[in-house]
Image (cartoon, rainbow over all chains, first blue to last red):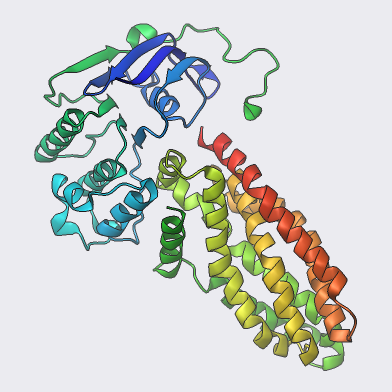
Length: 209
Length: 219
């Protein structure tokens, strides 16, 4: 079963085409890693696939309500505790498994600590634990391992492996080797947009797209 | 799901740095300052009381508007909420409701006391409460629209005030008229109906406009 099909996709950032002609598909149990130099448009591509901005061209097909997106910012409320933060997202997404997620990301000892008192790596672990409680099939991850130590990267890799084994899929932009099997790498460098192609038909107002 | 968002916003508002009670404190200071400015005699205060109370409520409401979406935008929650199963229109409505509960509702509770400071006649107090109860939801909802438009901007608060205050004019006119007629023993039914109509229209239409503005700002 294909969880994500992307055909001839072009995305734009700030009115400039970033990458174009991106085509791939992702089936259950598969992971795809996006590589490419800084600024080529990995984040823009992931945001477009997550549905946060419209594509310039091409087609994205996926089942309804499949995506869990994790960006550079973890979306944590510093005034709430670790458990409260996690429970909020579980309730919003109608998922569960709070305990399992806390164990998987080694957050049990921090359960009652306010998120304001977490280190950068601990915040990231909480942000990744959020993925586990969404119950979504398709994870879209933007540099998920930033500020994680080696042990935490290993924990995260295990979580991804379990997710894939349970019939999920993951699309991520990362430069770290997670040691996953069945992982494909898509290098975006050859897909860099050719300069001079307008992102919109003439006279089209971007604000009303 | 929607309740979880409301619960979280209320919890955040009442914890440290949440700004709960700020609106009431501002309202109190404003109402306490007016007698110093225009003199404490009843003859001077009574005619301007309804207007001062409503303008005060309006400005107090304005204080916390920029927090509705800006904080969620800064910490990345907005992106995650946009991919959540709740439609953005629902997010807007719930956040406006949370804003009303944390800043509008305390104003309504405190308004009778502040009415005394401005020598508002006793007969007008029920009408003051009723007009605020009917009118302030529109203030929160219109404010959410302004907040959605200015969400990505640095120092968007001032622009937000400039955008939102003109939209408050109809509510201000009819809200003040209800209290004035209540104070003078007239029939407040007509302005009350207009006030209710404005609020109903705003609640029905604005979530869609605000959600559209958020979608543009998320890109």
